[in-house]
Length: 194
Length: 194
DNA sequence: AGTTTTCATTGATCTATGGTAAGAAGCGTT
DNA sequence: AACGCTTCTTACCATAGATCAATGAAAACT
Image 1: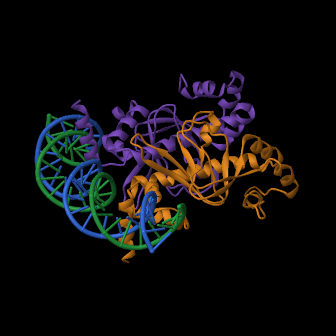
Image 2: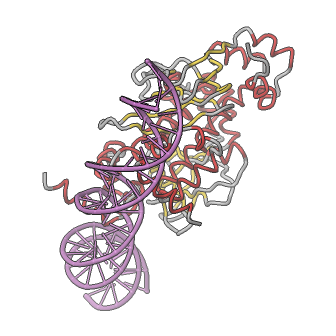
Image 3: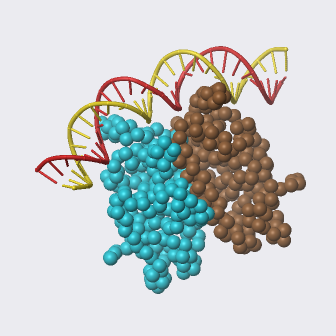
């Protein structure tokens, strides 16, 4: 049983949702718990939901031919993560999502999003807002990978995800940055000398 | 004067637009020519349009603190390019768009997109399709940068943009791949030995 | 508590890619 | 044709980051 819902706050703040509408939506809101290590999406399957992280931490990553994992995105509390292209096109995803910590998510399916759009006119354009934000975020990440060295990327990471550093093993951060754990360790050592 | 319009074909194929609707839209369609080297968008200014490339070739890139250019996207014929986040949020862009060749574009502004949505119900969701496609493309690019070496990225590039290699200087492709022109030259030499 | 597994650090070496510089080939301009 | 300017290639060396291996610390499991 959830007492304070981050998700409710999120809807009220981001989309100016009214209490009366929340009543209608609540029935469609499905909370689900995932244990550390459990998968919410595996490559090859078709993604059905967007996941709002109520509590905990997820990662969104791909695996390349040589078996190495590449984390494209972390999702701590109040983030939404999904392979929405897979939802949208009905195509198998090429990404994995799993729980880095025990995590409670709100499962958002098409029915929920549709009802939200009906109930709240603002949401139709706010849906676009989510996509635009995502694109902006991806552009920044591309710029960072194309133009910055490991140390600069690491500093960017700390700004974007202030608390994730304390919550995940370093090799995951290395995977996000596109370097090896050993290199990250050296970067951190060098930075700590200042 | 344009005889055959790629843009018209694009609308008819992608969005199943009807001839009668095309009549209404045509008045809002603004063609514009840009000479090689001319800017369509500069960092710091607010992006107002999406650009459909009728003929020619554009590049979309950022410049990092040390002055180096990083090409995020090429746009040859029938591609759409824009900093839609800047349009959407009304914020100054951090990207440049300029013409790699003399280029004719269709200037798509908010008024045009709005009319298109009114005239064609399909377009509302097809607008999302464009964004989803863009996100998918960016995900692939991120995966490539995180998980592949220069040679693999170059081969990917050739698949994605089969003719761009012949149309732009190699240093631009190097900039797209995140390597130096010298390195690209070495990669190509190695590949040509097979 | 003891055992096993995962993680972080460090040193030694290796490799892919960067930087510099020089020359050759192409192209536009006069 | 001769001159610049840009592009591409190649050689040589430098460097960031990768790889391998060893160690210790921390966490998870029994």
